[in-house]
Amino acid sequence: MDCAYNNGMVEKIVSDVKIIKEQNTEIKLLKEITVEQKEQLETMAKSMKAQEEFIVNISHELKTPLNVLSATVQLFNMHCNDGSLEEMKNSIVKYISSMNQNCYRLSKLINNIVDSSKIETGFFELHLTNNNIVEVVENIVMSVTNFTDSKGINVIFDTNIEEKIIACDTEKIERVVLNLISNAIKFSDKGGEIFIDVKDKGRFVEISVKDNGIGIEEKNLESIFDRFKQVDKSLSRNTEGTGIGLSLVKSIVELHSGFIYAESEVGKGSKFIFKLPSEKVSNESVVNSSKISSKNENVKVELSDIHFC
Ligand code: ADP
Image (cartoon, rainbow, N blue to C red; front, top):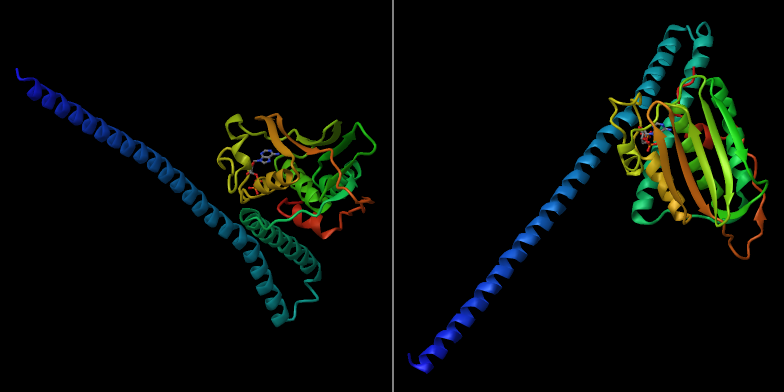
C-alpha cells in the first residue's frame, strides 16, 4: 500500500477518534449537568414545599388567637347590648386573661417571623456586653418558676461555678433559654422535671436544658433545628407551633460563635446543650445582670403557647 495514502488514513482516524472523544466528553458533561440540575430542582421543590407548609402552619397559628380575640369581642358586645356586663363580671375577668394570653401568642409569632427573616437577610444584630452568664441563666430560670409551678413541673438549676464573665447579648440569650424551657414544658407531663445546668468547660461555657418528657426520635434530632421543621405531628402531642423556635435559637447561638445540639430518647426525655465561647469584649466593663421577673413581658411572650390550667 502507498505510504502517503497510509499516512492520510492514520491522520483521518486520529482526527475521528479526537472528535468522538470530544463528543463523548460533551455528552458526559451534559449528563453531569443534568444530574446536578436535577438535584437543584429537587432541593428547590423541597424548599418550596417546606415554605408552603410554613404558610399553611403560620396562617393557622395566626388565626387561632385571632379567632379567640374576635369571639370574645363579640361576646363582650353582646353583654354590653343586653346590659348583663355587671352580672357577668367574673367570667369577663377570665375572658380578659385569655385575650391577654392570645395577644402574647400573636406577639411571639410576629417576633419570630420578623427575626427569622432578619437572620435570613443578615440584618439581625447582637449587642455584646460582658456579663456573668451564671447569673443571667439563673435569673431566667427564676422568672419561669411561677409558670412551671402552675403546670406541676419542677425546675432545678445547677452550676459548677459561681461566676463566669463572657461576652453575650443578654436579651438574645434570654430568648434562647426561654425557648428551650418553653419546649421542655410543652413536651413534659405534669410532675415532670426540667434541669438547667451551667458548666464551665474552659474555652466554652456549656448550658443545658434537660427534660424527662416525650423525647425526640433519633432521625429527627438534627432536622428540628431547620427552619419551619416540625416533627411529624402524628408522633408528637404537639398540635401547634411553626417550627421557627429552634432555628432561631440555633442562629442566635451561632451568631455568638457557639454551637447547639440535642440528645434524646423517645419516652425518656430530651437534652438541649449549647456552648458559648469564654471570651470577653474588650473595653467593656461587666454589666450587672438585672433580675427578670415572671411579670416580665418577654417571659409571658416566650411562654405564651403553653396552656395553663
Ligand atoms: P415549634 O414552635 O413548632 O415548637 P420548635 O422549632 O421550637 O418549633 O421545635 C421544633 C420541633 O422539635 C417541635 O415541633 C417538637 O416536635 C420538637 N421538640 C422541640 N423541643 C422538644 C422537647 N423538649 N421535647 C420533645 N420534642 C421537642
